[in-house]
Image 1 (tube, rainbow, N blue to C red):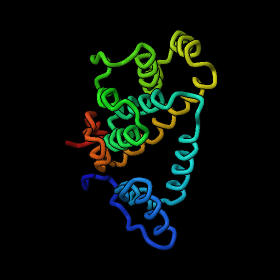
Image 2: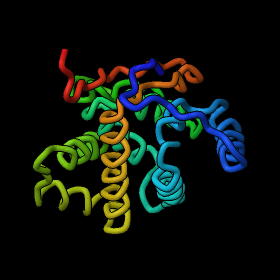
Image 3: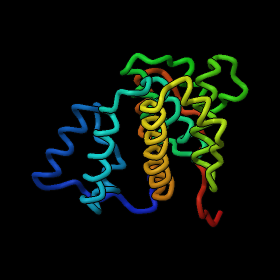
Length: 196
């Protein structure tokens, strides 16, 4: 991550800070720079972390579809941190890394199945302002995935919007997690409210 965050990172201190840093190192191999930004409001940090942990436990929808949907949101919004982290997660979960790498250019790529393309289009449609989800999108995904998986996929995309938009707004960028799998995020960071 660069020093371009819009709120300077706070020093992560105290017993709670030691626990958070130890957990991050164990789970990720390093302490993400973004933790210092969110450390300014520990209730927000812990709440986002708790929700993220619950999202990881959902299992009605295929893991690869959910991962790709999250990456599509990150790519569309321009969250290099989220795309980087999701490449890292895709590597650790043994998902298709060749496809993961193509997410930012999925429309031009020929590596995705018809269902994966529908999921990526759905994630992008949910991310639009105003959301552009159609009855046809939902009906098609419902028939292929079932109600439980579609509800889960929808919630994963909503969570991805929650985290990616916060990171972009705060200027949080990639920490280099994708280096573990030899992938560099392709999404360009969206400059929000820049005076440049």
